Image (cartoon, rainbow, N blue to C red; front, side, top):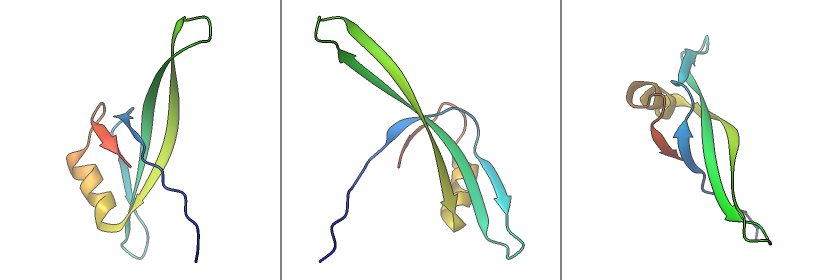
Length: 77
């Protein structure tokens, strides 16, 4: 039996998806996701940091990303 890790990333797009097509006709969409993290330090100080994650979406899902998503849209991967 194989062990898998599962991750859900929830954030906002930093720019419109960049959709391109391979010579085979398959769509590829590049997304950049900004994920905010708020936490308190040991001394009780509130901190916030942002993590940027690049995401590549293939096929029909990539076409749909280009069609329905835009800068600032919330997204979950």
